[in-house]
Image (cartoon, rainbow, N blue to C red; front, side, top):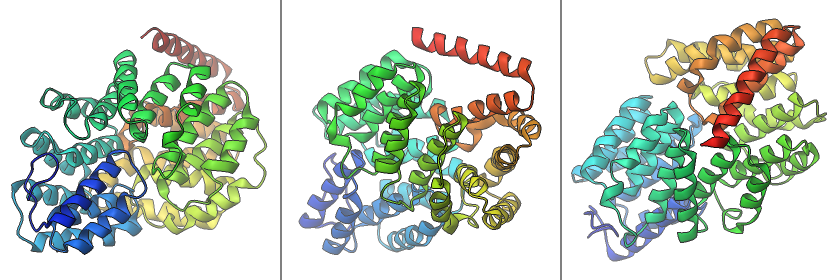
Length: 425
């Protein structure tokens, strides 16, 4: 049997085929039901290799150590089953990522997409790995290579446009990014990634009122989306830059943090939003305590440096020295391993955590030195330009508070000119 793009499916039956197509379509929109549908697919056919593959990707792409055993079980089950070349390449990429080889996994998926250009799962997983490793060029070019092989008639074309839009945005091509992102949403309003790609354009160009209208004007991404918290976070950034911090705090208390998420990707947004508000002088009350408590389960993981950086904000601001101790020890263990996160942590994550702690403790001079040492290479530990802007914002605040007014003024000038250049693109 074959999937909706004509690719062979090993171990499939008609019920599982329909459910797998549904799960993949849901994942293209980052719909929260994709996991439940994937599990239903495997109930319909326990020997469906791509069902196990999708299940493993859904767990692995959350960057959480606790998800690794579940992903590994799916990977090992699929590995035992007969599988074809495309399925085998997915399994090879999964194995690399399970072993902490982020870049190698991305390369396997890169080559898979060259030979199987309509495999949207490979494109989505590959771009997520590019995002986690901060590879802006591959965010764009992974998709550009297959774009001529696609057409409007193919299932999931909207998702391809949304992926390309995000890659273009992270590469600084805002005009084309906005065009493709808006086209994707016109085709499928529930495509949360395409919504997010345009949100990034509007953020980077400082188009605040337009950004609010874009996020408020499309209700389709706001329900049952794995990316909903992050998209609400984007809306909050516009309010902060318009000095409407009350609205941003309301968003924090509501859709960003109100459901008390324990997912790392959503806790990153909670930490980043509270930190930005504090840099603006907003009293956030005791909100850090709850965020720190939910980060606590991941304090000793040392699985992904970008997560540790944001967890450290919560631990430091909540006064949780016990959790900071666990996190620092985990970073030491991470640096001793032979995998990609050792480099993420050693080069950016560990000094970034120390910069955050120094800032909270009032040692702003030390925070300046640490942040200046990593700011030009911060992409190495992943995230987007919008997320990593927190490093520059913190550096400016630390410079001002440590009496380094000339440095602060120089950084502000740099920032202002960059913002003007982005608006012109």
